[in-house]
Image (cartoon, rainbow, N blue to C red):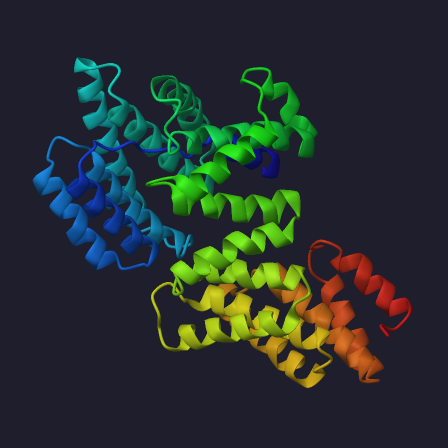
Length: 379
């Protein structure tokens, strides 16, 4: 299942959007995009309603109304009540774009919006593990990326979708061998070119700047393991959109990878405060993650009592969220608690925690570490 998911995620591409050369239109759309990233959904809805009213023949307003729904879904992927409305809105955009393309096959605006709608529809399909639907949407989206580039190769925003494809088409087959046979059906990628295109969009894109920074942050974090570059883009996103939990949690994760534990603790403590104050998007799942990384930070700062509190809070919230299911956060919290007990000379308590870890599924190196610490106490 994991392999299928990787393949489907590979073929589902974000595509860029080109807009009419109209200053008022541009300003409205950029205002609305910023409102979406700031999670100001009510304000964004009003902005894109204005776009639809003033530019009824352009698919932009309807597409970005769908993007409001996408970010609401993104904040809690376990909540599926908005799925049908999101898909309905995207299908309307696709139908509108098809109507435009029937009259004008080279209409760049319609090509981009159709590609973007297919891409986001496919992204939701991967989240819901509807692999066949995801694969079909990816297959249909890819030609639109190339068509858009052929129509406007000098536009920086146009390079966004192509940059994503170039990067992942080169990197994923190297990381996952099983993908290589599938790649015979697709054009080859170019990692360096893809990075350059994404960086161009991040620095000079009119409408794709934020999304390009997001992709650069995640690929430097997850694929390149270049945490300094990841931090660069993460800082920019966090500073521009300080109350976006997706951007803030990535900033904290990158600090953990860089072993900047004091800064990471501050970041995740700030997240828990926003959760308690009911900031939009700061829900129990992100609070649970924050508790875990506060524990990790305090552990590495040798503040073991504080670390213990963090891991216990994480365990309690995990059980409330997942019930009988067990997450990696729970397993690793138990492992860390065993290590803390060992450091405190409480060997019997440590052994109990290691055995609890072994009673659950293996997560990463959880079993090998627990077995190792059962043989020789953690020092």
